[in-house]
Length: 352
Image (tube, rainbow, N blue to C red; front, side, top):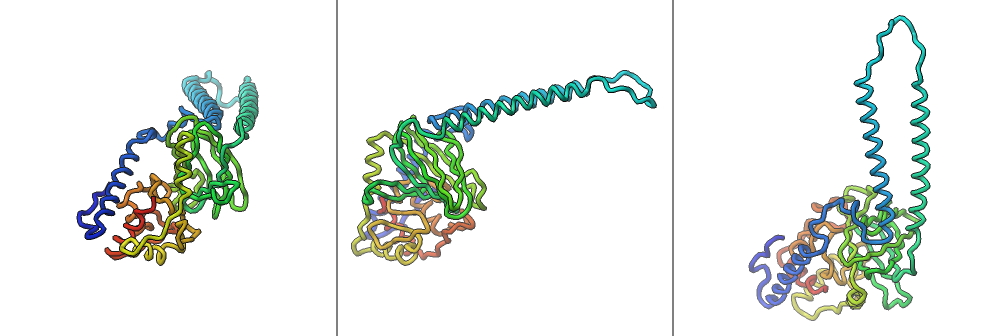
């Protein structure tokens, strides 16, 4: 994490400078203390944390085992062919074939039976993960953009609906229904430890469900190449107890009040002038729909589709050098003076 420059915030804004530094420390501690820190990228091959991913994991084991067996058989046949010598014969005489086709028939028959069995097993797995065992606790609409994720928490009451970005909170041990959409090109939603891959196709709504049996943070990724920023289109699923999830929901439903006069208000006005065309802050005049909802920006662990940690320094670095971090994204690199950086950072630090 970058070091905060001494004296960057001066005068009457000193309390807010302390708040920004505290936020940086908390963010860093959160990043290093999570249950998923230090895990190997391919751990999902050995571990499953939900009923929607367990049958898929077993299918992966079967396919991997068969692949290894095929490679070993082919290697054995190659070695045998290299070591086996034909008996000496007159090269001018064409001899009779002696049983070579029989092995081709046997190999073709065995391969056909194995492939037919895999088709049946794969269909059984698809059937097992098609529907959750109980009614979903909540329903989310996830929309893929180049290159970030919009998450809408639905509810029968409009006052209890809200939108967040790149971070999905779910209660532990309860199935969650996901409606998957794309705003531009084909994406793929994949949380390896919780469920298999599902395509997000423009003009079509696909559905899937996930369930986390243990509290923790599970990494997700778009697994369908969707452009130059594809590698940085990640997200996180945060599984927490029912009480913690309820508290998080209540916090997310809070709106923001426009700040009073002062440098924070100057930052708010700058945000309206430069950022409100794309971003929403509920409770204010900022109502853009092209970028992530920033109402509770500081409650998230990461920025830019998982590319950066959500610290004050990284946030300003993203705002001013977005095209360097993620070329081709809709977020422009903002040109700001030192004073504009200061007041904008102060305002953004209030979005808890």
